[in-house]
Image (cartoon, rainbow, N blue to C red; front, top):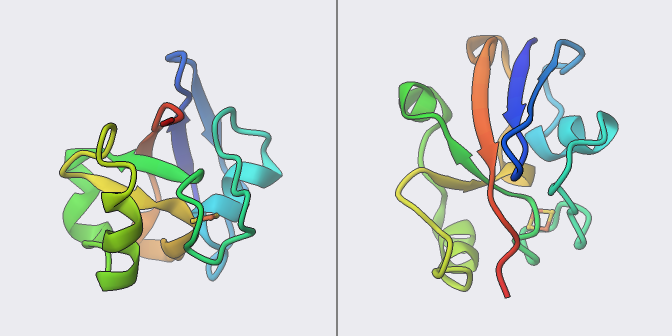
Length: 107
Ligand code: FES
């Protein structure tokens, strides 16, 4: 499955080794994508894996659940309508070609 990550500095990174069942965060980490820190290791409690989903992909990716939404709310200074925590997005064949922008760190 192919995924394009746009790093916070604007660099586009194309990866094609995303496996179904992996989280988007794991794909980002495995490929050294800048800005995907994943401090909590995918437990939906740090928001350092925050990405903005490309609007064209939003429907296929879907909205965050309540727990994730609450976490995103804590980074409300940078969160947008298309915000997701990448550790909560599971790769599947429907997401081939997915494009996301890594959110800048919030503090
Ligand atoms: Fe911590 Fe996603 S890795 S919230």
